[in-house]
Length: 225
Image (cartoon, rainbow, N blue to C red):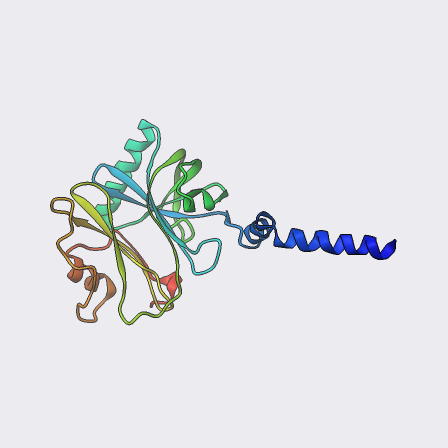
């Protein structure tokens, strides 16, 4: 009787291990994406974009760009703040309360309690105010692939009929995260998604390639001095 009972226990365990839902649940637990996910805000015409500030390791190993919105009062304040930051060449970042990044990875449209910072939220930035920010439109979602291609790679997304954004695909160290707003003609980008400019300071190099300075550039987290 004991042997029969043991047989059924082993059989049940094997069936559970082969159950896709069970395995998916375990995988999700192993690679949880719940955490604090800081983002950079960018003004693109009349739209506000939020770009997840990625790292190489989970739960931050995704490049994500969304169009975001909030109530009219805070929307005007954010746009004014972003315009001022452009003149001063400073950065505006946000830090939502702890949430599951899978909401954005799966291109859902959550509304999150968010603090807006003048400056980098982890590097001495000053909190300005808090608001409920709605992630209304996913524009770009890509998991970081730690590869070593021969050349740098860039993606292009359309923000509006007249404006696009060139995104540098983060690769193995040394690499960088950059977002560059570019003009579109008939909803198409006439430039090349490559950067063969002479080796100079990274900002100058990108500006030479895409005729526009980066709206966001991060090197420290990816091993570029």
